[in-house]
Length: 123
Image (cartoon, rainbow, N blue to C red; front, side):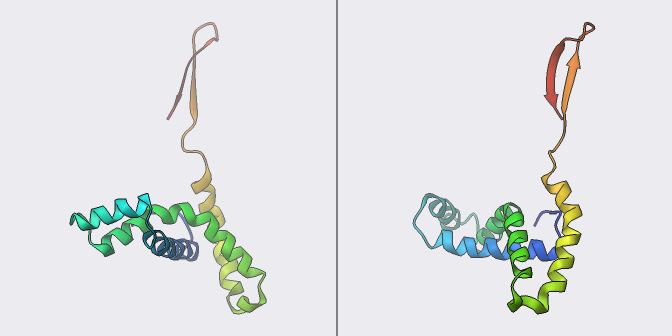
């Protein structure tokens, strides 16, 4: 799996969510299911490889929902024995989260000698 900037508990929660989503998506008969099934049927991927690839692609998109679930657990007395670990993981993930959700690159403005904007590019 590629390197993802997230606390290990947040990442694990997102990955677990992605595994559950895989089960749900692959149990239906939709376009996504057909595409993944075709890869397996053609021998390009084993079922386990398809599952891992799906999780690797989807888990990063589930980091914020994973944080929300963990935050919700902090308010539930049923999970009181986990509160300290969850609280610490969310605090430590805050620094990593800033890098995840920050815009990648900045716009670069070019101006001519008269100060007129000539070009806008992103890096």
